[in-house]
Length: 186
Image (cartoon, rainbow, N blue to C red):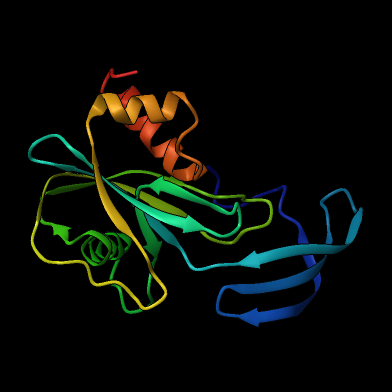
């Protein structure tokens, strides 16, 4: 991609409507390159996120199960979380989240993909990692607001979940589909 973006919008005015830790929203008045204006364009500011496809030495996928209030359902997901300011890199964030939520760590790590929940309105990037040969190295270290159980799936169980829309978190599903496609497992 080019360093200069000839399609970039010019921000004429910007105002914060909310500045909460998980709900920072601003309203921008923007001008498009053709001169047209949008008076009320809403942008959600989030920190970057991480998610990890963690696979044990026994080829089991380490998944977490937790309640998701937005959809009012309990979901099976990849281990995921937010990049904290003190983390030196997204990989450090992903390693920290995997250890905290599951007690698993070590292994071989690589960045699988980067994506955005919604680049039209969200400011953050999600870094999706693949961690192979992970092993249990501690107990979970959950926050008081977390109720997460750890589950292990075979490749066939994982594929069945994906084929039946059992992974509701779209970025997790995208990373898992990419993993399957890259490894000729689809």
